[in-house]
Amino acid sequence: MFKVNDLVFKYPKNSEPTLKGLTFEIAKGEIFGFLGPSGAGKTTTQKLLVKLLPYHQGQIFFDGKELHSFDDSFYEDIGVCFEMPISFSKLTAMENLQFFQKLYKNHAEIQPLMERLGLWVDRDKLVGEYSKGMKIRLNLVRALLNKPKMLFLDEPTNGLDPKNARIVKEIIREFARDGGTVFLTSHIMSDVDELCDRVAFIAEGKLTEIDSPRNLKIKYGQRTVTLEYKENGGVVSTTYPMDAIKNDEFAEVLKTKDIETIHSGETTLEEIFIQVTGVKLHGED
Image (cartoon, rainbow, N blue to C red; front, top):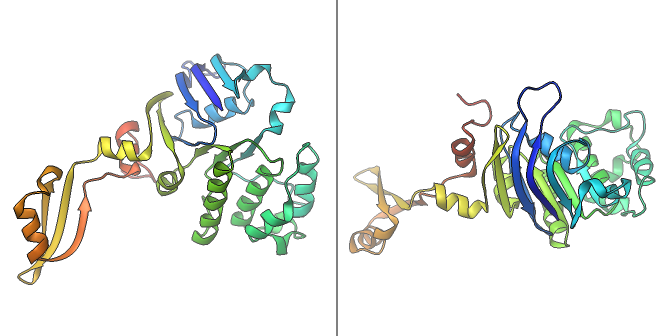
């Protein structure tokens, strides 16, 4: 769906480029995670891909054509859900959606989307009276109004309770299963792990890794298995190399001990994020 070759971008007032030669592809039907610390270039990349920033070096292809060759019809094929919900606060939710719907040729049905996201009963309430979570969910409805081929989602579950976050993730997965493509940015690594087919990490304007979450966890994890079991009134923890789990000692422990937990040495995307970007999440020291 997107092919990016040696993308470089510098803001006029900056001495150094924000993006320093990005090259990547996003396949049709793929949920592609784009991860990195604040200031790494995620937002700039997204703005270039949705034609909000016009000038750059390098090439961007969308659906086989150079992006700069598209006119405003390009926006018929994309939906964008920014992290900060933007709506007309003095209009109702339904008035907002009806206004934006008129900008497009293709129209999705509003009621089923709003019902699924728990907004239908409040469709005639002013958006200014909506909670943050309601505004985020309304933002997703708006991004889907034109039946897009491509969705850009920036922190789509941030600020949502677990139930509504689960619904949003189900909608994202269904969109991809139906042939849609998703560009996802998020600091919630569990969402990225759950949703994304592949993820790219960006740090200081350069891509440091691109692969599936599974392959990255194997690459950066340890080939070990740790058993915790009760013994002499306490809990004993023993770690074995993955290749050693076929030996008699490991089998004997499984047979004779009161096993409480078994863990592989698989790492997490959060740990990989820290390792490949050099920046910790959530303000950690």
